[in-house]
Image 1 (tube, rainbow, N blue to C red):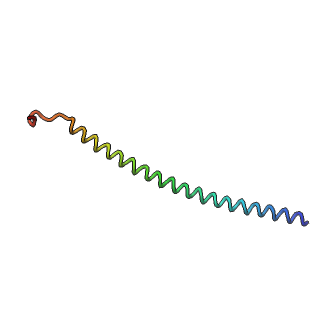
Image 2: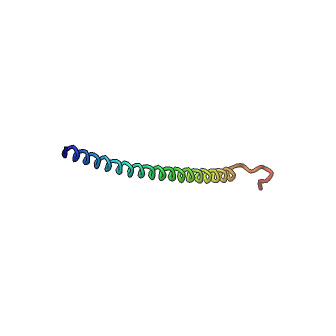
Image 3: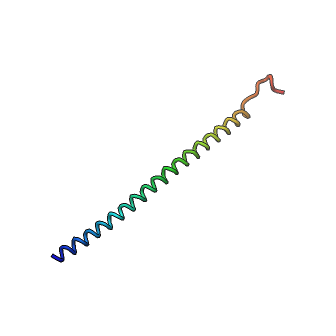
Length: 74
């Protein structure tokens, strides 16, 4: 009977250890997911800023390259 109790206690201790490890891993996964979402948000803002800057530059270059009307030429 004593062996059974010892085995049961050992198994319960192992299970408790596994539960705590599992909870820690779940917390780390949630933290990583928050970091990923934050990085995605930063990435999208950077892409929008880059696109708007390129649009501005394209417009500026197009204005310089476009022909002036023959009336305003000197």
